[in-house]
Image 1 (cartoon, rainbow, N blue to C red):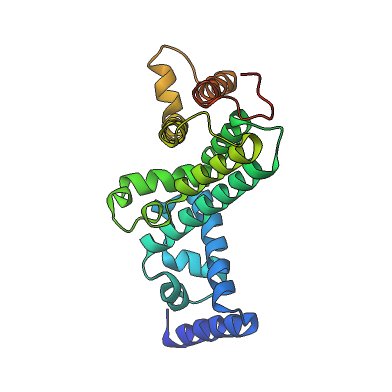
Image 2 (cartoon, rainbow, N blue to C red):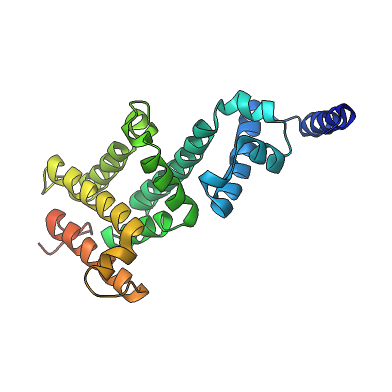
Length: 226
């Protein structure tokens, strides 16, 4: 690219950014939205900061300013997805009186089965982000928020808890481990049993998992019979 073209390219980027006039929060959200679309379509290994900048219509320097490195941008995208899922789950747990673990597990599996989320989780595992002390789940402790919401719902309905906090946390760990493991490895897991992964078997697995949780914690419904 000639110097003239470089100058013209930079001038176009500056005009786009000037027209946008976004706040820092809006600019960061705009870049994240562009990153989500690219990562969902191509995966983390096939995208770079320049690709995200081009998709967002901003300069490479602006993306670097808000996120620093490409790995930080990918992790921020995963964090955004995880936070949205957690907030939606908590809202649903606190407002949908006629729902229980089966409905919540369905929503969790649906979210994790999303190609973007699956690719980001696989990237976090393979890149070693899970081992970092500053990985966002360690910092935000989102599962604790979910546990608190479940405990609060049950206390509001029944006054006391017929299970311990340890039992509640075990159930959450079981669901999270099963959902991630199953979603990422379902074809191989079923093949190792000489069976084929199908939608019917997926539904069977989710239903059985929900039954395990309900048996452990007592169905979270009003006026339970037991």
